[in-house]
Image (cartoon, rainbow, N blue to C red; front, side):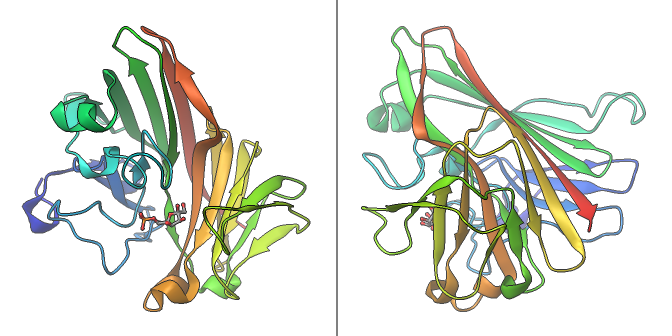
Length: 278
Ligand code: TA6
């Protein structure tokens, strides 16, 4: 169906009452609603949907580069149109979870920036009220390639000072809040990472597969990942005065160590998002 600015989207509806909306532009999940109708994700008020820039919010991809570097910030996957590979639309609702598979392959634009043939396959599934993502990158060329990546997930919070991320205690992290080009390496001493006192931009290396974001409503978002290795926690504070109080990004990333994929091989990472009562 047409999304904002007439940009194509796929809508998933589960018999439980949950739903999700995915823009083909950037393969960006912009909405994930619980059966109650409550929205879990956050889309920034400055987001544009006319493809003039990546959609700022929901679950944007960063591929084949996380952050700044030799190519454009966060790579090109978030500002290209992905194609629908397959959907669960032809199946009866009770046969299978609603699902869409989106595919991105190289083109002249990507080859100029990153001279490699690839196929990225991203599957988004609603399993009851859970949202599941499965991201695979296949090397379809004849030489190895190396990349970094992230799912730059934005979550709505009741107020940024009420939000907390747990599961990161004891980890080494790169604090990019002062100088993103020369991050400080620190050890996380806190049971939970909190927000609201300044910019938070931290890359937690070798993070556990399970982390939780307490959104301040008595509920938390449980994030269970495989394949991703790192977790990035970001809140822009006063650099985005109009919206920073309403969201936190807790991102699954593969950035501390880049991935190298041999020709014919692939790399895979999955995430399972679930709202849990506290
Ligand atoms: O993941 C955190 C981060 O890389 C920050 O350093 C900040 O730049 C943010 O993402 C947003 O990036 P964007 O290009 O979407 O404005």
